[in-house]
Length: 209
Image 1 (spheres, helix red, strand yellow):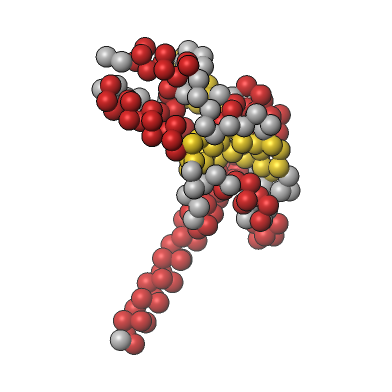
Image 2: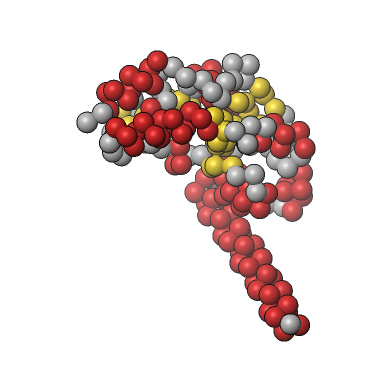
C-alpha cells in the first residue's frame, strides 16, 4: 500500500511538472507570435485579478444555466465596440474564444494560453436552453457543417478579404468586459443570455436542405 501511495505521489508530481513546462512553452510561443516582448515576472501572475472573488462571481454567475465564453483583446475600445455592435467571429466561436467550465485549473491553463492577446476579456454568455433548442433543430433539419452560433445572428454572414465567412453574434449575449490585471468590470446593460430573435428562425429556414 505504501508503495502504491508513493507511486501515485510521484505520478502527480510528474504531471505537475509537465503542466508547468507546457505553460512555459505556451508563454514563449505566444510572446513570439503576438509581439509581446516584456519578460513575464512571477508578480505579474500574482497581481492578476482573474481569480479575485468579484471577477469570478461576475464571470461565473450564470454557469449553472448558460455556456460562458471568453474572448481576449488588447484594446478596451475594441471590447467596448463588441458590447455596442456584437461579437464578430469566423465559422465558429472556438477559433477566438475559450469555453469556461468552472474548473480553476482548466481556466488557469486556458488563461495562460490567451493572456498575451490583451488585458481585456469579453465575457459571452448564452443560455443552455437556447443552445439546446438550436442544436436540436439543426440536427432534425439535417443541416450540415453548421454550429448553433451560426444561427444566432440578425445580419446575413459576410465574406472578409480572405474569403472567410464572418458572423455577428448579437450584443445581447455579451455580459461585459473584465480587465484581468486591474479587476475592473464593465457591465453590458442590455445583456440577456436567453435572447431570441425572429431572425434566428429565418436563418434556419435559409440553411435547411
